[in-house]
Amino acid sequence: MLIAQLTDTHIRRPGSLAYGVVDTAIFLEAAVAHLLALDPRPDAVIVTGDLTDFDDPQEHARFRQITAALPMPVFPIPGNHDSSAGLLAAFPEIAGRCAGGRVNYVVEDLPLRIVMLDSTVHGRPHGTLGAEGLDFLDRALGAAPGTPALVCAHHPPFLTGIRHMDVQNLFDAAALEAVLRRHPQVLAYTCGHVHRAVTTTFAGLAATIAPAPAHSVSLALDPAAPPTFHMEPPSLSLHRFAEGRLVTHRSFIGAFPGPFPFFGPDGRAIAG
Ligand SMILES: [Fe+2]
Image 1: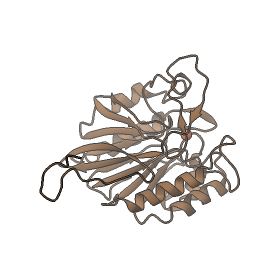
Image 2: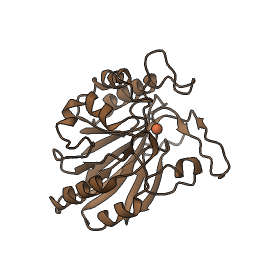
Image 3: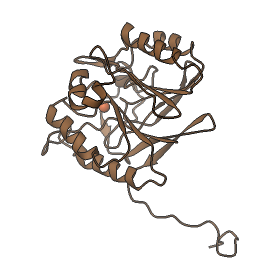
């Protein structure tokens, strides 16, 4: 079973560039083409926030239009550039899974349960799950203690060393850790927000940030570095769940030379 993770697509209205530089729709189109070309194709796509740049209905509509080519289900949660209400208005089928205006829901349709959490704080860049989100997570995991689970939100609950992002991460990380440690069937936590592929541990679990399909936050580990971005090679995360283990691959979006065989027709390594 394969789950693709798109994040931080930052779709703008037609004719508008993110930060005056990035035509994010072209990058999302490339990501969709990449997902369609994968063999085997992912069984589902999770989108961990910042679908849009300004939560504009036209931006949400454009995201939906571009991703409509995907034949597998798409499961989004909002990021700080979106809003809970804006996302639910754009995804009525997701709204039907949620209660109370927050985008907290569980994907039950797959062998791996996926808990999608709304970490947005309206109008602010940082995140919190709040008592409602933490209680939702605790109850959702408690309802199926024997089924492996992946927990997703937009904000990382750990420091990356990129200071201008670290000051706007998940503020109630300690409370999240306490909930996760009560449920040993959770395999991993994954998120977005930082526009870079990052791996660590959190609450004794694998914890990843998925890379961006468009602009990457600069890898600036000097605490005094200003907030900037680079146009690094676009990529996404591919989570493979098999035999009870979740393995996360980074899949670069684009056309690259290859595949080249290691072995010739005689079965021997090609000497050159
Ligand atoms: Fe973002």
